[in-house]
Amino acid sequence: MNNRGWLALLAFGVLALLALDSFFIVNQAEKAVLKQFSRIDKADVEPGIYFKWPLVEEVVRVDGRALVYDVPTQSFLTAEKKLLNVDAFVVWRVNNVQRYIVSVGGGSSNAQVMEGRARQLLDPRVNEALRNEFASRTVFQVVAGESNVEKLEGDKAVLRDPVTGEMTEVPRDQLDESIIREAEGESGANKPAGDNLKMANDQREALMDQVREKVNESTLEDLGIEVVDIRVKQVDWPDQVRGRVFDRMRAERQRDAAAHRSQGREEAEKIRAGADRQRSEILAEAYRKAQAIRGEGDAKAAATYAKAYNQDKEFFRFYRSLQAYKESFKDKEDVLILEPDGEFFRYLKGSQGQ
Image 1 (cartoon, helix red, strand yellow):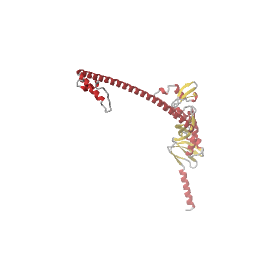
Image 2 (tube, one colour):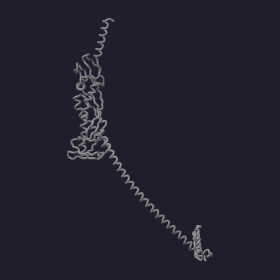
Image 3 (cartoon, rainbow, N blue to C red):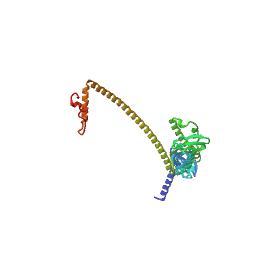
């Protein structure tokens, strides 16, 4: 192939590349802008197929869907100055693509690079909003979503630890307004369980909504990013205090167990005392009845003996003498020394006992 053929082939290749670079496609999951020499010529291009000048105009695409990422674990102080480790995640999306590319892109057209920078810019805003909200709530309110304000005294609020029952005073202005309103109104203890659960869910929703609104105040205007939702995944004690917290909880459980055992022993003693009393009453009643029955039997036996004695007194005396002989000479070793003319042997002398 001569030089002219190579030149024609090269020209065809250049024209093909220019033709391919003259069109671009924006799909439904993307947001795009058209830049001309680093200047945005068309913002927020709708999904579809478009023409552009090759080598002059450039298309910058970003993901238009809702994105989720985990916020690094941070430590926050609560209203009673207790430190908590908080894990959260953020759901966000690009709201103003032009402002997003200008503020976050930093001259880059790579969507992943801009997404990484967006996370770096979102993290301090999210952490600041979470820190402010946690500082206006107690540990119990953050975890359970319920208020543990025992009472309000002037410019102070008295908080009750639900585990230990310990009372803590904090400045009233440090607590969230919703908590103050709830403390001034009807207490949760007087409400049905369903209302308490709904109130707890409302408290959590209020916490997350306030964090989201505060973050959006700056991100929408500065970064073109809308924070759709912020959720706390886990709240835990820091490693340096977790052991002491568990020790206190363990001591509390042991105290409760000891109280339950003491109550159990007390109830057991009451049951034993009642059983012993019932046993004594049953035995006494049984002995009384036995003695009464025995007395009745003895009386009947005595009456029978008396009747028989009265029918034949001599035979009865003879029979009793035989019984006495039998008992006296029952054992071979028995020795009985009597006078021959004694009354004991009178029935041996004759049938009439003479």
